[in-house]
Image 1 (spheres, rainbow, N blue to C red):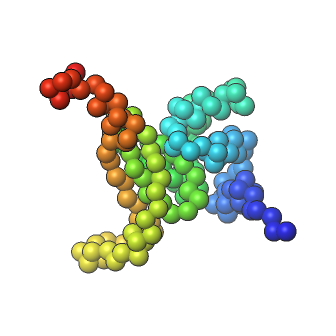
Image 2: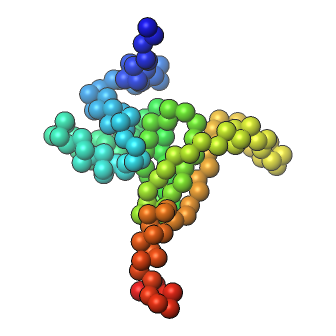
Image 3: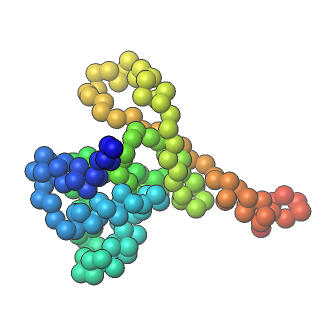
Length: 156
């Protein structure tokens, strides 16, 4: 029976390869991000981590996220509000972001990886990743919006 790869062991190996110390804070932040499906902000992560690491500071969370993102160990998802949200990237994917509630949903679009880039950016440098972010209103917010409309069809 084949065993599944251990994501924390892979993270530790990636840290060592990048010349980063494997600290308890880094492990816990990565573990929390790996389990998250909501693309949390640094503040949300800090709140979640306080149960396991009561002395962890928000500054430590920010610095750790910045370090891990700069080494490609996690992904920073920028939103229209310039609010950084974070994730562990398991496979190439893209994001749908609701302008009302801020929810982020991952989606796959394999064609993007195969599309040839425009010639005018050919001399720019090396492209290592393509990412599409699509903004709109999710069904949950769209439904609640319809409920707020009056008889004339205008928002209350």
